[in-house]
Image (cartoon, rainbow, N blue to C red; front, side, top):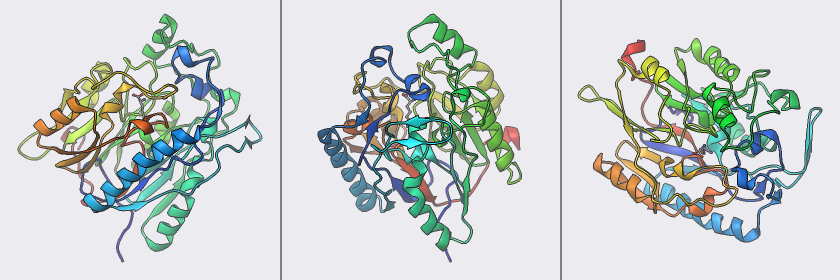
Amino acid sequence: MMDIVSSYNEWDHLEEIILGIPDYACIPQDEPAYRSKLDAADLNTFTAGLRKDETIQKARVQFDNLARILEYQCNVKLLRPEKIDYSKSIKTPFFEIENQNCAACPRDTLLVIGNEIIETPMSNRARYFESMAYRKILNDIWEKDKNMLWTNAPKPTMADSMYNLDFPWDDKSKERKDWIESYKYVTNETEPVFDAADVLRLGKDLVVQNSFTTNRKGIEWLRRHTKSRGYRVHEIHFPGDLSPVHIDCSLIPLVPPTNERKGILMNCPERPIAPADKERIFSGSNWEIQSAPMPFTTKIPELCQSSYWLCMNLLLVSPDRAIVEETEIPTINYLESLGIKCLRVPFRDVYGFGGGIHCVTSDIRRRGDRKSYFPNFD
Ligand code: ARG
Protein backbone atom coordinates (compact mmCIF):
# COMPACT_ATOMS: atom_id res chain seq x y z
CA MET A 1 0.00 0.00 0.00
CA MET A 2 1.47 3.31 -1.08
CA ASP A 3 1.65 6.37 1.16
CA ILE A 4 -0.41 9.15 -0.35
CA VAL A 5 0.69 12.02 1.88
CA SER A 6 4.42 12.68 1.81
CA SER A 7 6.03 16.07 1.29
CA TYR A 8 9.04 17.47 3.11
CA ASN A 9 10.11 20.45 1.07
CA GLU A 10 9.14 22.84 -1.72
CA TRP A 11 11.13 21.42 -4.64
CA ASP A 12 11.16 17.61 -4.82
CA HIS A 13 9.38 16.02 -7.79
CA LEU A 14 5.67 16.78 -7.36
CA GLU A 15 3.19 13.92 -7.75
CA GLU A 16 -0.10 15.05 -6.21
CA ILE A 17 -1.48 18.46 -5.23
CA ILE A 18 -4.63 20.31 -4.22
CA LEU A 19 -5.57 23.30 -6.38
CA GLY A 20 -8.05 25.87 -5.04
CA ILE A 21 -11.21 27.15 -6.73
CA PRO A 22 -12.72 30.63 -7.15
CA ASP A 23 -16.36 29.60 -6.67
CA TYR A 24 -18.50 31.69 -4.32
CA ALA A 25 -15.47 33.82 -3.43
CA CYS A 26 -16.36 36.81 -1.28
CA ILE A 27 -14.78 40.03 -0.08
CA PRO A 28 -14.68 39.60 3.69
CA GLN A 29 -16.51 41.94 6.00
CA ASP A 30 -14.48 44.44 8.01
CA GLU A 31 -12.68 42.62 10.85
CA PRO A 32 -9.32 43.27 12.55
CA ALA A 33 -7.35 40.56 10.69
CA TYR A 34 -8.65 41.70 7.28
CA ARG A 35 -8.38 45.44 7.98
CA SER A 36 -4.68 45.05 8.86
CA LYS A 37 -3.92 43.75 5.35
CA LEU A 38 -5.56 46.53 3.36
CA ASP A 39 -3.90 49.63 1.94
CA ALA A 40 -4.93 52.77 3.80
CA ALA A 41 -6.72 53.90 0.59
CA ASP A 42 -8.97 50.82 0.58
CA LEU A 43 -9.85 50.91 4.28
CA ASN A 44 -13.14 52.72 4.15
CA THR A 45 -14.20 52.07 0.61
CA PHE A 46 -14.70 48.36 0.18
CA THR A 47 -17.99 46.50 0.08
CA ALA A 48 -18.14 43.02 1.54
CA GLY A 49 -20.02 40.18 -0.12
CA LEU A 50 -19.90 37.92 -3.16
CA ARG A 51 -17.36 38.94 -5.80
CA LYS A 52 -18.72 39.88 -9.21
CA ASP A 53 -19.65 36.98 -11.45
CA GLU A 54 -17.38 38.30 -14.16
CA THR A 55 -14.40 38.42 -11.77
CA ILE A 56 -15.03 34.83 -10.70
CA GLN A 57 -15.40 33.65 -14.31
CA LYS A 58 -12.12 35.28 -15.32
CA ALA A 59 -10.32 33.66 -12.40
CA ARG A 60 -11.87 30.29 -13.22
CA VAL A 61 -10.36 30.35 -16.72
CA GLN A 62 -6.88 30.86 -15.25
CA PHE A 63 -7.40 28.25 -12.52
CA ASP A 64 -8.53 25.69 -15.10
CA ASN A 65 -5.60 26.45 -17.36
CA LEU A 66 -3.21 25.91 -14.43
CA ALA A 67 -5.07 22.66 -13.70
CA ARG A 68 -4.44 21.43 -17.24
CA ILE A 69 -0.75 22.34 -17.10
CA LEU A 70 -0.32 20.51 -13.80
CA GLU A 71 -2.17 17.42 -14.96
CA TYR A 72 -1.10 17.03 -18.57
CA GLN A 73 2.23 18.79 -18.77
CA CYS A 74 3.61 17.97 -15.34
CA ASN A 75 1.82 14.67 -14.79
CA VAL A 76 0.63 15.68 -11.35
CA LYS A 77 -2.51 14.19 -9.81
CA LEU A 78 -4.92 16.99 -9.02
CA LEU A 79 -7.52 17.36 -6.27
CA ARG A 80 -10.03 20.21 -6.07
CA PRO A 81 -12.00 21.36 -2.98
CA GLU A 82 -15.74 21.30 -2.59
CA LYS A 83 -17.82 24.28 -3.65
CA ILE A 84 -19.22 25.91 -0.54
CA ASP A 85 -21.37 29.02 -0.52
CA TYR A 86 -19.16 31.58 1.22
CA SER A 87 -21.79 34.29 1.02
CA LYS A 88 -23.46 32.65 4.04
CA SER A 89 -23.08 34.24 7.46
CA ILE A 90 -21.57 32.48 10.45
CA LYS A 91 -22.20 32.88 14.11
CA THR A 92 -20.12 31.29 16.86
CA PRO A 93 -20.32 31.95 20.63
CA PHE A 94 -17.56 34.55 20.10
CA PHE A 95 -18.23 36.43 16.86
CA GLU A 96 -20.66 36.87 14.03
CA ILE A 97 -19.96 37.78 10.37
CA GLU A 98 -22.15 38.36 7.32
CA ASN A 99 -20.08 36.41 4.81
CA GLN A 100 -16.89 34.34 4.56
CA ASN A 101 -13.89 34.22 2.22
CA CYS A 102 -13.23 31.48 -0.39
CA ALA A 103 -11.36 28.24 -1.10
CA ALA A 104 -8.83 29.75 -3.48
CA CYS A 105 -5.75 29.31 -1.28
CA PRO A 106 -5.30 25.86 0.26
CA ARG A 107 -1.67 26.78 0.99
CA ASP A 108 -2.88 29.00 3.84
CA THR A 109 -5.14 26.42 5.48
CA LEU A 110 -3.46 23.03 5.11
CA LEU A 111 0.05 22.44 6.41
CA VAL A 112 1.69 19.31 5.06
CA ILE A 113 4.64 18.05 7.09
CA GLY A 114 5.82 14.68 5.83
CA ASN A 115 2.93 12.24 6.34
CA GLU A 116 0.82 14.70 8.32
CA ILE A 117 -1.73 17.28 7.21
CA ILE A 118 -2.60 19.92 9.80
CA GLU A 119 -5.70 22.07 9.43
CA THR A 120 -4.22 25.30 10.74
CA PRO A 121 -5.98 27.58 13.27
CA MET A 122 -6.10 30.70 11.00
CA SER A 123 -6.84 34.12 12.44
CA ASN A 124 -9.32 35.72 10.03
CA ARG A 125 -12.93 35.27 11.05
CA ALA A 126 -13.94 34.97 7.42
CA ARG A 127 -11.64 31.96 7.19
CA TYR A 128 -12.83 30.22 10.35
CA PHE A 129 -14.40 27.26 8.52
CA GLU A 130 -12.21 27.38 5.43
CA SER A 131 -10.65 23.95 5.94
CA MET A 132 -14.11 22.37 5.64
CA ALA A 133 -13.79 22.72 1.86
CA TYR A 134 -11.03 20.11 2.01
CA ARG A 135 -12.67 17.68 4.42
CA LYS A 136 -13.81 15.27 1.72
CA ILE A 137 -10.32 15.15 0.27
CA LEU A 138 -8.75 14.65 3.70
CA ASN A 139 -11.23 12.01 4.75
CA ASP A 140 -10.73 10.12 1.53
CA ILE A 141 -6.95 10.14 1.77
CA TRP A 142 -7.10 9.18 5.45
CA GLU A 143 -9.18 6.12 4.63
CA LYS A 144 -6.72 4.94 1.98
CA ASP A 145 -3.37 5.94 3.45
CA LYS A 146 -2.87 4.12 6.75
CA ASN A 147 0.19 6.20 7.60
CA MET A 148 -1.45 9.57 7.14
CA LEU A 149 -1.81 11.71 10.25
CA TRP A 150 -4.76 14.10 10.13
CA THR A 151 -4.63 16.85 12.72
CA ASN A 152 -6.68 19.87 13.59
CA ALA A 153 -4.68 22.48 15.49
CA PRO A 154 -6.51 24.17 18.41
CA LYS A 155 -9.36 26.29 17.07
CA PRO A 156 -9.00 29.87 18.32
CA THR A 157 -11.99 31.90 19.50
CA MET A 158 -11.30 34.86 17.16
CA ALA A 159 -13.05 36.93 19.81
CA ASP A 160 -12.09 40.62 20.08
CA SER A 161 -9.67 39.66 22.88
CA MET A 162 -7.46 37.86 20.32
CA TYR A 163 -6.59 41.10 18.50
CA ASN A 164 -4.82 44.35 19.28
CA LEU A 165 -7.73 46.63 18.50
CA ASP A 166 -5.47 49.68 18.81
CA PHE A 167 -3.28 48.42 15.94
CA PRO A 168 -2.27 51.31 13.61
CA TRP A 169 -4.37 50.53 10.51
CA ASP A 170 -2.70 53.18 8.38
CA ASP A 171 0.08 51.23 6.67
CA LYS A 172 1.96 54.44 5.83
CA SER A 173 2.12 55.70 9.42
CA LYS A 174 5.21 55.97 11.57
CA GLU A 175 3.35 54.23 14.35
CA ARG A 176 2.71 51.21 12.15
CA LYS A 177 6.42 51.01 11.34
CA ASP A 178 7.29 51.14 15.03
CA TRP A 179 4.87 48.35 15.87
CA ILE A 180 6.20 46.11 13.09
CA GLU A 181 9.81 46.82 14.02
CA SER A 182 9.10 45.66 17.56
CA TYR A 183 7.25 42.60 16.17
CA LYS A 184 3.87 43.73 17.49
CA TYR A 185 1.03 42.80 15.17
CA VAL A 186 -2.75 42.82 14.86
CA THR A 187 -3.07 39.42 16.55
CA ASN A 188 -1.88 39.30 20.15
CA GLU A 189 -0.54 36.41 22.19
CA THR A 190 -3.69 35.32 24.04
CA GLU A 191 -4.22 32.16 21.95
CA PRO A 192 -1.97 30.21 19.57
CA VAL A 193 -2.62 31.00 15.90
CA PHE A 194 -0.81 30.21 12.66
CA ASP A 195 -1.50 29.95 8.94
CA ALA A 196 0.15 27.17 6.95
CA ALA A 197 1.61 29.68 4.47
CA ASP A 198 3.84 31.17 7.17
CA VAL A 199 5.78 27.90 7.26
CA LEU A 200 8.70 27.25 4.91
CA ARG A 201 9.42 23.53 4.79
CA LEU A 202 13.11 22.76 4.38
CA GLY A 203 13.33 19.05 5.28
CA LYS A 204 14.04 18.66 8.99
CA ASP A 205 13.82 22.41 9.47
CA LEU A 206 10.66 24.50 9.47
CA VAL A 207 11.25 28.23 9.14
CA VAL A 208 8.17 30.01 10.45
CA GLN A 209 7.33 33.68 10.02
CA ASN A 210 6.01 35.53 13.07
CA SER A 211 3.38 37.72 11.39
CA PHE A 212 -0.18 39.05 11.50
CA THR A 213 -1.34 35.48 10.86
CA THR A 214 1.13 33.57 13.03
CA ASN A 215 1.92 34.52 16.60
CA ARG A 216 4.70 33.26 18.84
CA LYS A 217 2.34 30.91 20.64
CA GLY A 218 1.41 29.40 17.28
CA ILE A 219 5.10 28.86 16.51
CA GLU A 220 5.57 27.27 19.95
CA TRP A 221 2.59 24.97 19.29
CA LEU A 222 4.23 23.77 16.07
CA ARG A 223 7.56 23.34 17.83
CA ARG A 224 6.13 21.10 20.54
CA HIS A 225 3.92 19.25 18.06
CA THR A 226 6.79 18.25 15.75
CA LYS A 227 9.67 17.97 18.24
CA SER A 228 9.39 14.25 19.01
CA ARG A 229 9.74 13.53 15.28
CA GLY A 230 12.98 15.47 15.13
CA TYR A 231 11.80 18.67 13.42
CA ARG A 232 13.44 21.96 14.28
CA VAL A 233 11.29 25.08 14.22
CA HIS A 234 12.91 28.49 13.63
CA GLU A 235 11.14 31.80 14.10
CA ILE A 236 11.89 34.41 11.43
CA HIS A 237 10.97 38.07 10.77
CA PHE A 238 11.04 40.40 7.78
CA PRO A 239 10.77 43.83 9.45
CA GLY A 240 10.59 45.69 6.10
CA ASP A 241 7.14 44.18 5.48
CA LEU A 242 4.50 46.44 6.98
CA SER A 243 1.77 43.84 6.35
CA PRO A 244 3.55 40.62 7.22
CA VAL A 245 1.29 37.76 6.12
CA HIS A 246 2.66 34.47 4.74
CA ILE A 247 6.29 33.71 3.95
CA ASP A 248 5.81 32.80 0.27
CA CYS A 249 6.40 36.31 -1.07
CA SER A 250 9.43 36.92 1.13
CA LEU A 251 11.67 33.85 1.16
CA ILE A 252 11.55 31.12 -1.50
CA PRO A 253 13.89 28.15 -1.94
CA LEU A 254 15.03 27.82 -5.56
CA VAL A 255 17.96 25.43 -5.62
CA PRO A 256 18.40 22.68 -3.04
CA PRO A 257 21.87 22.24 -1.53
CA THR A 258 24.07 19.33 -2.64
CA ASN A 259 27.45 18.09 -1.43
CA GLU A 260 29.11 20.23 -4.09
CA ARG A 261 27.32 23.53 -3.65
CA LYS A 262 25.12 25.56 -1.36
CA GLY A 263 21.41 25.85 -1.99
CA ILE A 264 19.82 29.16 -3.03
CA LEU A 265 16.95 30.94 -1.33
CA MET A 266 15.60 34.14 -2.84
CA ASN A 267 14.70 36.89 -0.41
CA CYS A 268 12.52 39.87 -1.28
CA PRO A 269 14.84 42.92 -1.52
CA GLU A 270 12.27 45.14 0.22
CA ARG A 271 11.92 42.62 3.05
CA PRO A 272 15.37 41.38 4.03
CA ILE A 273 15.49 38.78 6.81
CA ALA A 274 16.07 40.45 10.18
CA PRO A 275 19.88 40.38 10.67
CA ALA A 276 19.71 38.54 14.02
CA ASP A 277 17.44 35.85 12.52
CA LYS A 278 19.69 35.51 9.50
CA GLU A 279 22.72 34.99 11.70
CA ARG A 280 20.95 32.52 14.03
CA ILE A 281 19.34 30.40 11.29
CA PHE A 282 21.55 30.61 8.25
CA SER A 283 25.15 31.19 9.34
CA GLY A 284 26.93 27.86 8.96
CA SER A 285 23.98 26.42 7.00
CA ASN A 286 23.98 24.99 3.49
CA TRP A 287 22.08 27.98 2.10
CA GLU A 288 23.06 31.11 0.27
CA ILE A 289 20.55 33.96 0.28
CA GLN A 290 20.14 35.94 -2.93
CA SER A 291 18.02 38.99 -3.60
CA ALA A 292 14.93 38.41 -5.75
CA PRO A 293 14.59 40.59 -8.88
CA MET A 294 12.04 43.42 -8.89
CA PRO A 295 8.61 42.54 -10.29
CA PHE A 296 7.68 43.22 -13.90
CA THR A 297 5.06 45.71 -12.70
CA THR A 298 4.08 47.15 -9.35
CA LYS A 299 0.40 47.22 -10.38
CA ILE A 300 -1.91 44.91 -8.44
CA PRO A 301 -5.69 44.50 -8.48
CA GLU A 302 -7.63 46.55 -5.92
CA LEU A 303 -8.46 44.90 -2.56
CA CYS A 304 -5.77 42.40 -3.42
CA GLN A 305 -4.64 41.60 0.15
CA SER A 306 -1.25 40.85 -1.41
CA SER A 307 1.52 43.00 -2.81
CA TYR A 308 3.36 43.09 -6.11
CA TRP A 309 5.75 40.60 -4.53
CA LEU A 310 3.40 37.91 -5.75
CA CYS A 311 6.01 37.86 -8.52
CA MET A 312 7.98 35.53 -6.19
CA ASN A 313 5.03 33.22 -5.60
CA LEU A 314 6.06 30.36 -7.86
CA LEU A 315 5.59 26.62 -7.68
CA LEU A 316 8.51 24.25 -8.20
CA VAL A 317 7.25 21.00 -9.72
CA SER A 318 10.74 19.47 -9.60
CA PRO A 319 14.20 20.88 -8.85
CA ASP A 320 14.60 22.02 -12.47
CA ARG A 321 11.06 23.11 -13.38
CA ALA A 322 8.82 25.88 -12.03
CA ILE A 323 5.42 27.31 -12.84
CA VAL A 324 5.58 31.11 -12.90
CA GLU A 325 3.08 33.88 -13.77
CA GLU A 326 3.69 34.68 -17.45
CA THR A 327 4.24 38.44 -17.10
CA GLU A 328 6.84 38.10 -14.32
CA ILE A 329 9.70 38.27 -16.81
CA PRO A 330 12.49 39.32 -14.38
CA THR A 331 11.64 36.32 -12.13
CA ILE A 332 11.57 34.00 -15.15
CA ASN A 333 14.94 35.26 -16.41
CA TYR A 334 16.48 34.85 -12.97
CA LEU A 335 15.17 31.29 -12.58
CA GLU A 336 16.34 30.32 -16.05
CA SER A 337 19.81 31.68 -15.27
CA LEU A 338 19.86 29.17 -12.41
CA GLY A 339 18.95 26.33 -14.79
CA ILE A 340 15.26 26.18 -13.79
CA LYS A 341 12.92 25.88 -16.78
CA CYS A 342 9.77 27.98 -16.41
CA LEU A 343 6.26 27.04 -17.49
CA ARG A 344 4.49 30.36 -17.94
CA VAL A 345 0.84 30.69 -17.05
CA PRO A 346 -1.45 33.75 -16.97
CA PHE A 347 -2.58 34.21 -13.37
CA ARG A 348 -3.16 37.92 -12.69
CA ASP A 349 -6.93 37.48 -12.66
CA VAL A 350 -6.52 35.26 -9.60
CA TYR A 351 -4.23 37.62 -7.63
CA GLY A 352 -7.24 39.38 -6.11
CA PHE A 353 -8.46 36.14 -4.54
CA GLY A 354 -5.66 36.05 -1.99
CA GLY A 355 -2.53 34.95 -3.76
CA GLY A 356 -0.50 33.59 -6.64
CA ILE A 357 0.46 30.19 -7.99
CA HIS A 358 2.08 28.92 -4.78
CA CYS A 359 -0.81 30.11 -2.57
CA VAL A 360 -3.50 28.38 -4.61
CA THR A 361 -1.91 24.96 -4.23
CA SER A 362 -1.06 22.64 -1.38
CA ASP A 363 1.28 19.69 -1.72
CA ILE A 364 0.03 16.19 -1.07
CA ARG A 365 2.98 14.20 -2.31
CA ARG A 366 6.47 14.84 -3.58
CA ARG A 367 9.08 12.15 -4.29
CA GLY A 368 11.97 11.88 -1.85
CA ASP A 369 12.25 11.85 1.89
CA ARG A 370 13.26 14.02 4.77
CA LYS A 371 16.79 15.36 4.88
CA SER A 372 18.70 17.92 6.86
CA TYR A 373 19.88 20.98 4.94
CA PHE A 374 21.21 22.64 8.09
CA PRO A 375 24.39 20.92 9.32
CA ASN A 376 24.65 23.80 11.81
CA PHE A 377 21.71 22.29 13.72
CA ASP A 378 22.60 18.57 13.38
N1 ARG B 1 1.91 38.82 2.17
C1 ARG B 1 2.20 38.48 0.83
C2 ARG B 1 2.46 39.72 0.03
O1 ARG B 1 1.61 40.53 -0.14
C3 ARG B 1 1.10 37.71 0.19
C4 ARG B 1 1.18 36.29 0.52
C5 ARG B 1 0.16 35.51 -0.16
N2 ARG B 1 0.43 34.17 0.16
C6 ARG B 1 -0.51 33.25 0.37
N3 ARG B 1 -0.11 32.03 0.66
N4 ARG B 1 -1.79 33.54 0.34
O2 ARG B 1 3.51 39.96 -0.46
